[in-house]
Length: 118
Image 1 (cartoon, rainbow, N blue to C red):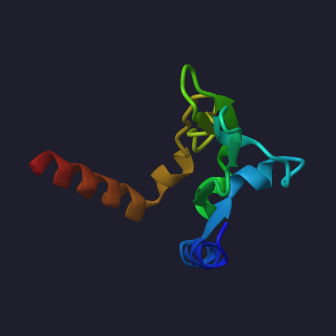
Image 2 (cartoon, rainbow, N blue to C red):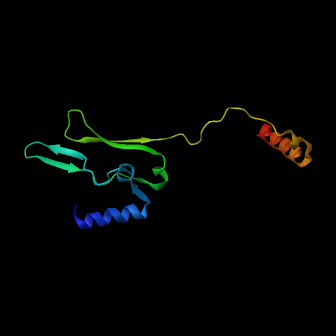
Image 3 (cartoon, one colour):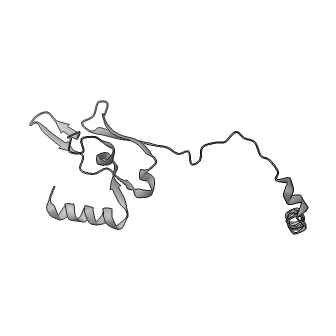
C-alpha cells in the first residue's frame, strides 16, 4: 500500500475511533487472506483493513473472509451480537415498603393523573 494512503487511513482510524477487527480477532494477524484474485496473470489482493468503531468492537463475534460464488471477489463476513442485555427470569416484584412513603405514593398518583389527562 502506498505510504501516503496508509497515513490517510491511519488518520481516519484515529480520528473516528476505529479498530481493525480482522487483525484483532485472528491469532495470526499478519496471515494473508485474499479478497480478489485472477488466474492469468496470477494476481491476488489481500484485505488491508476491516475497520469498525471501537464502541462496536466488543460486540463483534466473528470477522471472516469467505469465497464468493461464481465471482472473483471474496465476501467479508462479520457477525455482530445485537442483544444488549441478557434477559432475566421475567418476574417483577413491587417493593411494597415504598407504599408506606406518602411522597412516593403522591408522586405516583399525580403521574397517573397526568398520563390519563393527556
